[in-house]
Length: 396
Image 1 (tube, rainbow, N blue to C red):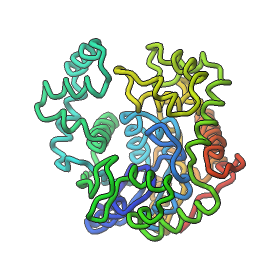
Image 2 (cartoon, rainbow, N blue to C red):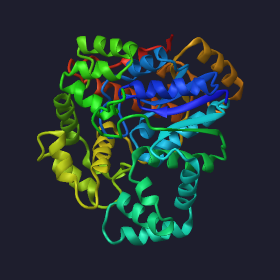
Image 3 (tube, rainbow, N blue to C red):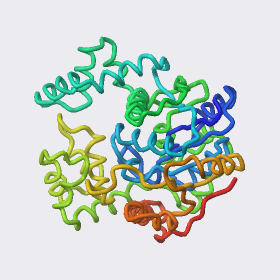
């Protein structure tokens, strides 16, 4: 292991994430690159803190390089989120190790499941199960259990699901990095704080939004906590009411015909339901409740609403067109020197530079800037737009 890569959201960065970085160092990693989602998360919501704050927290807690996962992949379902992250890590040309946390830390199980999900006969059986009217996750688990007993439990846990998606994406790209599959530390996903010093990111977000800074302080590194407090002091933190108003304003005034082109719409009438529900709901949660059904999970309807809000549609590039650096340490700068000749994508140190690379890059840069403008309205203290184009990468 020389140059390790992690795909993450750090929403927020906490002691479990610090443990992963420290463990990779213990195993011999010379550099650690983070491929991090931006201001909107895979859960279909704005991140608690801006990508710049989260990137700085990662760098000050041991990471060497933070590269942004662009919006269309950062806000996508697990397979597309994973593909975007793996594609960019592979494109750097110098990452030899992929690390991720999983509830099942035996990579053989994950490899077996990844291979199963790629089989044509599995796909046919899944289509037949979906025709019965259930949700995609439930149908996938049912069919997987039929083919490989014991796999349904693995597919019920989010880190395992992402780990399997990473392996499938790497296989598609013909990339075979060394794996550092680490057991998830402490509390399970969406669980309360654990007694051994670790807590889930979702538990920490709940504490943050309840103004419970004592809990936050207990489970995040002190350096990260200082950054979070600085943002809290200026209102640069996500606010649910602000997001609801911004989301519903955009959805009510948008061209609803475009909703059908969102990746999560699926051609199943869900886009029409989103358009009508946006005029009935008074909050984001009411909107999700109206859209939720036996067939459509909360995760899917949140992502659909976010795609329509941000302008993510099926005409965007199929793969990320550039590597945008959010920040780097001195070791990270050294890695970028290697990547200058090894990378298969151009490297940009600002969004403005990225947008000048190609027509596809310009579209992704414009979408990122739109996301920045809308994210500024989702904060406790709204801020002006244009921040993303003017920000230079951070050197720590």
